[in-house]
Length: 425
Image (cartoon, rainbow, N blue to C red; front, side):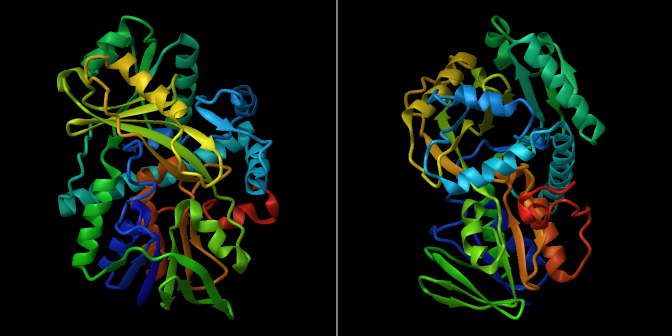
């Protein structure tokens, strides 16, 4: 079967690889010249099933309101901007801010994340793919007793859903990660360890998986911009680009934050809004003073991942449309917190700031699966967990196109949950 994949990020490139393994003739198109050059380029680098808690929780609306006038706040949005897509997305987000929805959405996200983590491990064993991976788990640290208690409550929910976490004292955190010794002297209240989670360079992985896919015959066409999608009689007939028309037997939509605009004319309303995240990547001048595993600072809403001799620091979310510009006021907290936690690891003079758009749904659950168009499949809306869910959602998509039953339930993962503007019960 001839399959056209729209998007060459970590999700699209991995999907192409699994489709090629099934023997399909695959072509991937992307407006960037190479794979993994947008949201996958410099993200937080975590394979983090432990981050399955959705953004929409009962306390978030009030907290977001308090942050509205802080340009360096962890979550920033300005509702007075003329932005109808954000307003529509925001109403759906508010509907998900209930305890019942939190539990439902956490289960759905964790289901995909745990499956994806297992698929990645099997892929690594099969191919020996290398991407600066570290498999020592992810350590969550907390700076106050109240935050630690809230983290333990979330950890208990995740454990009940199948993700065990170890509760650690400050001393145990330092024994596990000696680079935290400086923080332990001041305000380290405790930690949670997700021992099976991992970290690694998403862009390097995407490049490597694209190479393996190309070796199997996948064609990657860079510098190609999708214009619109043509359909007839319940089937996608072609995709029109700035370089001509592309036809195929099946189509996979994996365009991240840009997915919704290309299927709106088809009657598919995908509530995906970009959440701009920031990162810095610094060279380590004193590697022994830097973390040897991935750390999530729950108090600062930031993650730290060791990538060879680099330290990746990522965090913040800005709901400001499709703007990818860098705001120095939002880069500064990343540098400041890195210096605070690991003061001698680097001079932090050259931090390589970056910003990318994360395709976020109102319930933090990706949109995966079939559509009313028999040959169109969705693999998008992964939010901050695109790297975490890439392998699992790619395997699911390949299974659907091959006519196989996926290995996990797809209940609650399809676009239908948003039909009529509401949410599933």
